Every structure is written in structure tokens, then in C-alpha cells.
View 1 (tube, rainbow, N blue to C red):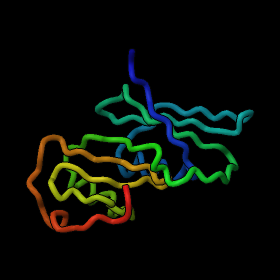
View 2: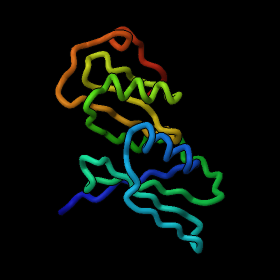
View 3: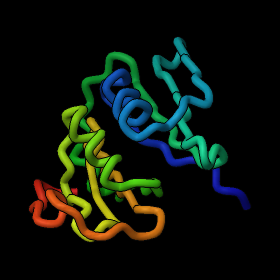
View 4: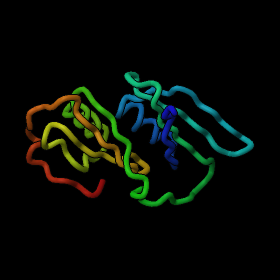
Length: 139
């Protein structure tokens, strides 16, 4: 058996691509526009693990509310510098819901409220402002 991908439905394809590609650094592997079905599938992967993909599914013209996405769980990514990753996402306007107080783990949510877990490769010592930053919202 081989793991292929996880699929998440997205409301705003441009906002989602900004988050996953510009924010997290994933790269588009392939794209399928299906006019007869009125949807687009975009597969993304991290450069370090191209075999594990995230499929973004965008249904054209849909105003369907996918809910809070809490029933999905989360996607997890290992990062080289959790502080730099969180600073980058924060500079793009994203809220770090669970700051990396311990130098190891953080959570942020995508524009479609998908929880994203960031895990530090190895461990970094706790550092301000993260060490004393409170949680914000839910993840």
C-alpha cells in the first residue's frame, strides 16, 4: 500500500493557493480543470516529499459552507525553522493559533479553517515572543 494524498475542499482557490504555496512553500504538482463537472483539482506537495500530496478541490460557483472543518483533523508539516515559518505566515496576515512556545509545535488555520500543524525538525530552544504568546482561537 502507498499513501497518495489528502483532499480538502476550498472556497477561494486563489486564497488557498496563497496560503499553501506562498505561506507554507508547497508547490503545485498538477492541475485538472473539469468544466463538465464544474470543479478544479490542484495537487500540491512539499519539495522535500513530493510523493505526499494535498489535493485542493474547488467547486465552481458553490456557496456551500463546509463548516468549521473541525471534523477533518489537521495536516502536519515538518519545517526547518518553526520560528521563521510562523513569522512568515504572520507577516502574510495569518493568525498563529497555537504559537511554538516549546520550539517544536505550532498550529495555524488555512483560509478554509483547515488546521495545519507545524512541527520543528529537531528542537529549538524556546524564544520570545513565542514563548509567552497565548493561544488564539481554536485549531
